Image (cartoon, rainbow, N blue to C red; front, side, top):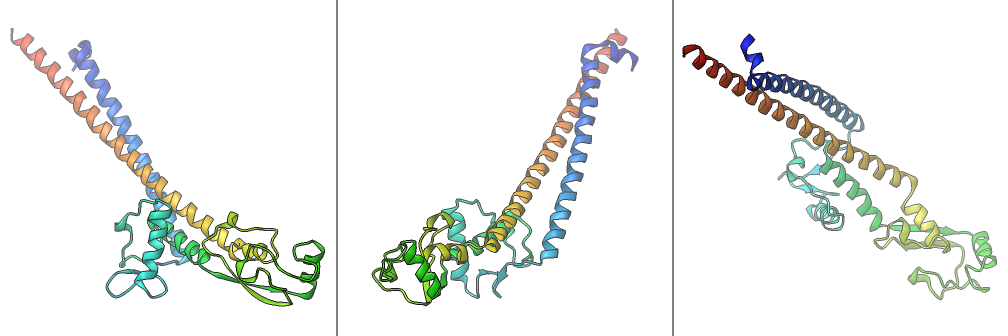
Length: 245
């Protein structure tokens, strides 16, 4: 073994084996931390107990229908361009704990918000204040953005305002009907749920990336160790030849 240290090829082999061991240690640490992250995410999901719904045939459903789930999936894949991993949507494991499941749940909340109708109640004081602020004509005629009531004289009562596929920025916040409808549709609860689900999806994706890094480090460890072993073996073979001569 002493003579191996005197040969450049043998020295390089020993160095590569040491480097390989370093890669293996790094891979072990990365894998351990990743598994800890997966465990924490799983525990968080179980604590919330949010599950996707499937029918008896194992098909994803929303509010009892496959068509509802398909519409949500279209929003997720076509409108948001999210690469859904079909294997994550497992009827035997309905708990929301993967990036695709988190994003589907986010799309579910968003879909029903986008296609909902908000009931806005106006009081006599609201109408009087709107006339003063020139949001209504002097006689109370509405000329805002909600087409169903344009040209009508508004009186105290409840009015239906369709969200009509609009996100938060799609509303006119200064409009007498559209402004309150925006706050009602895209409430703090809706924003919080979307944000929380987004964090879950990002966390799962990050953990998958970390697991890939652990695998890459392990692969580098295998390559370095194999090369180092080959160099040492070749050095020993050369030394054996020289000794034989």
